[in-house]
Image (tube, rainbow, N blue to C red; front, side, top):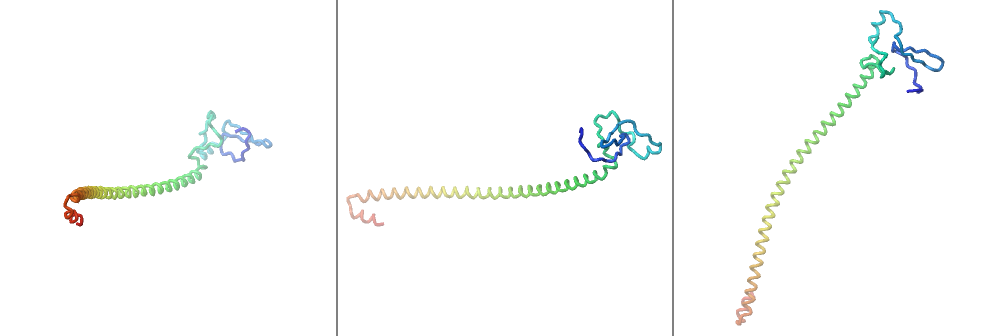
Length: 164
């Protein structure tokens, strides 16, 4: 970290010796300070840190250190609340998905019914158009036959045929 100024925190680590020399705080990592034999039982973390640990940072504490209990409890509470929120969102989205699938299936059934009805109507329309075309052809044939009769030498016959 170099020359970054950090606020002073009390040193709880028995392996770090702090001495105040003017404005600068000097940390010396070395042997643990002399302790009474009875004092070793008071600190359950006595002797856990090793000098050889290159990754050691004086801010690192073991996860089960009592100083982290409040932070861990707050983090656990925060994560539990977030888990509950996400679970609720998942439940809601699952319900919406189920409802959407049910609606989609219902619309599919309605679509199939309408398609069947449309196919029947189209077949009926084709029959009606075929019948209309057949009747139109019959009429044209009858009109041609009538036109031939009207050109016949008997004008009386033409006059009677044209009036019906």
